[in-house]
Length: 338
Image 1 (spheres, rainbow, N blue to C red):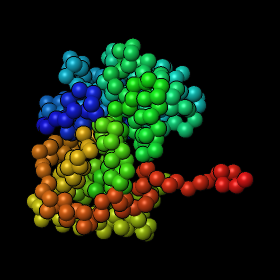
Image 2 (image 1 turned 90 degrees about the vertical axis):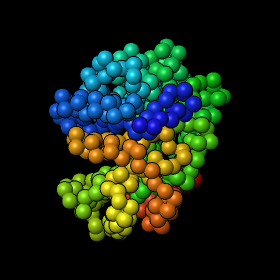
Image 3 (image 1 turned 180 degrees about the horizontal axis):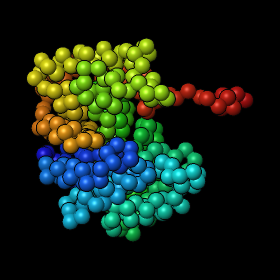
Image 4 (image 1 turned 135 degrees about the horizontal axis):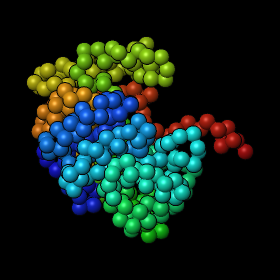
């Protein structure tokens, strides 16, 4: 497993990172099997494990804590905070009050005395980034956190956080965690270049785009549940139909290249010069085994050029998948009227 340095922190991390969102009630409820999967990943050379307090209400962190007993010193452990941990509005966000509580809860669940990378799960529009960075810097000085980062930050928010850290003397965000796949390439235009400009490490997630690039003949099968998620797989939607057409072409390309589609998809993300590590998030052991087999796959320029013809650089095939909108609509009428 190849390694890269994580955003100037000096920490060496594997190009594959294990994401654990699917461990616990949100996915695999078998704790013992989840622990074995983590051990399989570590034995294969993965040394970066990423989780979050909100994953299954803390259950994922507890599983990771169990799995790392006796192996903690060999792992770069990352977790996230900021999303709602209950109904209380103070149990979320980037306030100093919540950060001090959230980190202690995560340390307890992870059964460790420090976190290597502590990330703000989403930007918090209600909290001054100066307060957030100040509280995170206190954690670094206290030895509870080694480095801090963000996730889902727009280019403007990345720049603001970097400038605030410099002006105020805070520890700065060393990493960014955006979604990135062949079908969602919007971050290539500004997010990834901005992260590069500030020497940040980039941990991408969603290389299989919620199953669209998993290699199933019909990615919509099994996803026709009611609710907000149903639109993601509704072929009557133009953007969804465009994704299905792109997947059809990518499937043919992967067959021509002699690669399973998931291997093509993960290798594509790893090929971007800004990407430090690709987060894979398997739920079952067979999914993990399959993805690990792609760890040494390298795509040549001819294949990358063909991918560019199917999905142009910087483009999100389905606009509804545009996770980081550079020009979000103004929904509050008071912001557009005198």
